[in-house]
Length: 175
Image (cartoon, rainbow, N blue to C red; front, side, top):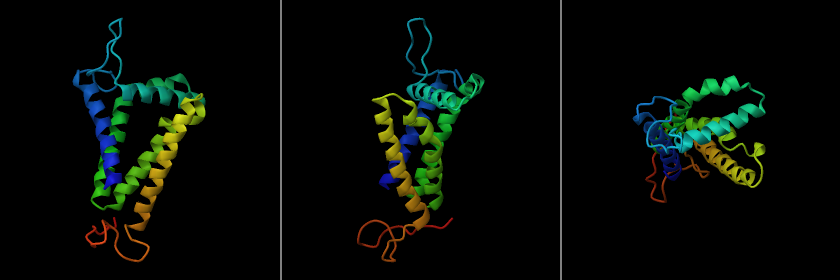
């Protein structure tokens, strides 16, 4: 349940930022909502969209992608962040309900997002060290999710997994 709650909270925060960016009527990727205003009157995108844009730009540039690739993705960045948030939230609910597909969905989300969000190899120190820590955390989470996705909640002694010694844990469902 704790693992599921981490992803549920993360997904909810991403969906909340997406809703904030849409609430000002600006549409997907417009940067509307409760955003900060610059001195020249321009509206700054929500923090998660600004972060995602910078990281995606950095990764695409390191791969030699033309600027047109990023400019083509920019209008859809808010929707991509919302899609990640929705994947995290849905996977967390599935995981909390004892479904293997929940762990698999979260694994897929981590595998797609971690190299972009925590591209430590492209950053100078000390930012690289911080991002390496975040990437290592995601690898550890992926290991826990892989165990959930493959073991089906079974304990090593052959008993059912789940909460404590009372045997009251939920049985893992094959999907």
